[in-house]
Length: 236
Length: 193
Image (cartoon, rainbow over all chains, first blue to last red; front, side):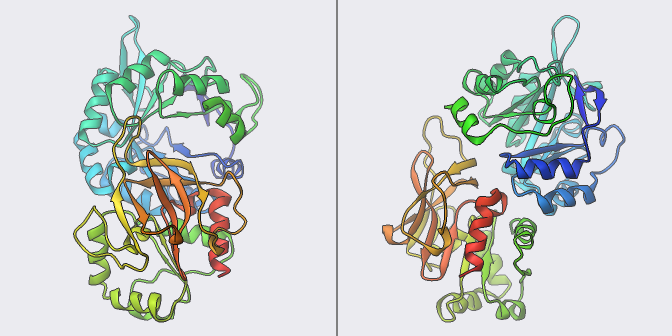
């Protein structure tokens, strides 16, 4: 499934099969998010995760319904390197510390979904954008780091699926506020966007969604990935 | 200790039989060994002693001389010891494990893809191309006493040994099981030894 601003669900393909194509394209890392797990209050789909890890030979991260150390350990055991928490951590920040201690910081990503309100005020959202936690992104990022997050996956919900480029202001603000790596997500439409968010805004990595599953904006599904050489040049 | 599942997945995918050994009888039968590991140095060495496999591993490595591949922490365990802990390592390779130095613009742990450059020629790195890259996650790194045992080097703030070899004993700092065809090549080379 692919979304625009966390809405407008569009079917992209069978998840395991899509991941298999990304494996053939030799993508650097794969972030797999089950955006309905927390809303539906359920655990991860372990058998799907097993299918993915048995045929994908790159670092894998999973988010969606990670509410306890036990669930996180189960996901890691399947062959994922990192788990991603958002809603459960917003509800109970101590979960970050628990997870960090048990599975190690390097295996723990805290996802921060940011949406702007009517007056432009930025707030962190849970439940795939539906719940406003009231927290500001910088404050929450610093809290997540001090609790034991190893990385931050920062999503601009307003840009997600729009192909308009990353929210550079938001990314810069969060990167400057923490020392752990920040993965920027939401808005990428071209390789120049990737280079800008890494070189100008200081993100450690960029996450791509629509750009790698559609031919172009509003066009058909085409799972793709930039060539290594092309990426190397863009980031040099 | 570490992600054994991912290694089994990769070996299965390239058509190599493997099983998990954690006791003496299963280990006794092994013709080749992969020693994985993620976590703390002393914790891993203590576990190896608790499981009662320390002496057998030494015999497999030094007397039977079967091929052994240490991955990540597994590579560090086959050095003399690590700055991370107090306990001795296996010491099969004349090298030691030290913390990656802090320097500006360098985030520790070293996490992500990085290139390797070749050191001493080895059967493990046969057919590697110029731009061969692997996935790394580590805060400590291995430094050989002499260039003789360094088969791949990587640069991250400092030049460290990303792969070492002493006879039939090998160690790699990166995760070949998470490194696409580059990792598959390495495992195939190891299986063909």
